[in-house]
Length: 404
Image (cartoon, rainbow, N blue to C red):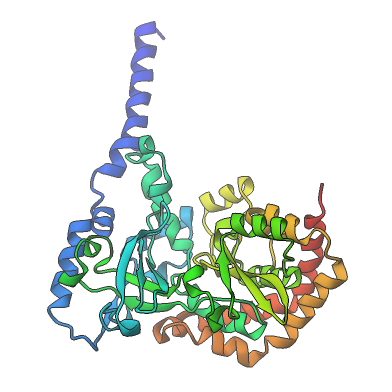
């Protein structure tokens, strides 16, 4: 082949790559544009607001973007696509009526999470965040216009949009701290001002912001203060305040049960407890967006798991305990390094004794009725299987905890 011919072939290949990587995801992507269009969302919210009253509930579809054909799901898995497309009926969140009246404080959220903080008349802060995320926001700007963007956005299908609602019943049964997430529709209201632009028209979860504004509340064992992880370690070291290691261990075993792999330092708050002239620190797990994760389907996802084992799914077997531990490994080793295997196993046995079939049923009944109809009994069975196998998972947990 002449040099000019080779150059032509290379140019054709380069053109093909450009078309696939940059042109395809930005041409004819009506579904993606519709799903993430700010103007369309606000227009729908205004239209819906005209037909609802302050005490009404509304029907919401949380994520039509995840509706895909068989070819797409062969590559990226079915995950929770059916849940994201199923209409659910939820109450409308009118800030002026909730908790005696809520005032907006600030925008909140990480790169992917969309939310705001509000406060009640007692000064306590509450977090309101969108159930749906925008995974693409975690991408560097130079990748935002490439085929990576829709692929990243699609990973939201692996999240259970209602998993956080189940956790409080399970946590309460074993004495683990928890917030109390509630599901709402955020309406368009003139009184919300610029916060409409961020939140109106979204399916949202509202829960306590576990910070110092909740000091003295029975919700967090009458804690005198609530600290983030860095503050907790500083306080523990300087003031010599012990950490409740057994409660932390129990909290981590609950994470294993619900396959919540995203337990990095930012997903914990810490309650400083003072009772009977004793002071200690208790863990408060927060942010349950990854509970009951489902990532183990689809050719691309299976390949991704070979390189990053943390994306563990909620299945009847613990496929990879080490993967489930990755995000919290530094925290685990800092807090649990002196815990014996017997102490850890005793926590597993305690959990098995406390989480009865009745507790499991009550927990998963927190799903919206439309959702329970689809997956409730399946998730009860999966959770029950994981609960029965918890001591086996603890064996691996302990080994990984003490790996050099």
